[in-house]
Length: 421
Figure 1 (spheres, helix red, strand yellow):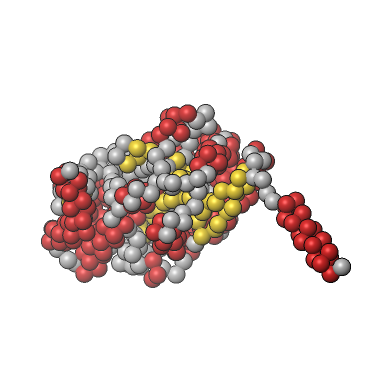
Figure 2: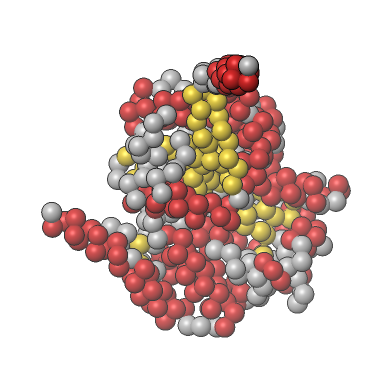
């Protein structure tokens, strides 16, 4: 009798397991930061469109995701699809970890290459192969106080560096000793990098194997940046020394601020209601006219050797839908990478976003080397030494080239060895 009871219980358990087995293909998706939290709201629509696919979303903090990705690569435990910062694509390409997407894109009716901003798309092209599809875009431009700029005699934002210099000089003259024309936190590399991509000379040379920071172009951008501190147009302060950038903007501590699209929402939330007409955004001015900026953001990638690529690719196509991109923007404030998404009435009516739309037509990718994040930090440190301590510019740039050449030593060796085969 007891034997029959045990058998019966086992049959019930087996039946329950059978009834609850999910026949769908389950794909793992790694998403980061705020986007990882918000994207969960979009996945029910994807699963409704694709009832045979289930998405296992893993939300990861930006502070640990790079190490987690490398650990997963070493342990052969990468997800089916992941969000990857555009500056990381070259690093994982060097590891041969990414699956080329050219054939999938060519066969796709959901992804139109020509609808994407050129500079953003180019961040994913390594050695001629497309390794990611842009998910959202990021760039830098000017946030500025319209009222204070007009009071200084400039009713419109600057159109080139010479006009920008004149505007900052006029603002500083009116502001006095305790206020400034521009805020350039010395522990942030973004503003300097945004100026550096506007000149013709590349930051790396010889096939991206050596530093090119002593070139005339970078010397001009670096000199323009450091001169803002020398002339006291910018305070010698790091981000941690500024209590609240929005409060300081409201009280006129600075007029210009080079930053990204997330600050549109922050400025609207944090500034007093009567400030709505006192600030605006503008594309970056260049040395002689319209300026470029950095092509940033994140892309969606597939990793080599994945067993569920067909299902994972459908998720990438879903996020490429302009309507989905518009909804994602509404949830996060992140900017769509497709031009057609910008035709949505909500984006078209947002005046603060117009400058970003214009700037995105003039963005450039940073050098596509795995060591880039180390290099850009050294670039920022070099600028801080000049701005804070008065180090000689030319000597600093020569030393920066030497430091970067050392960082790229392994890259040169790999290329040399490959050439021998």
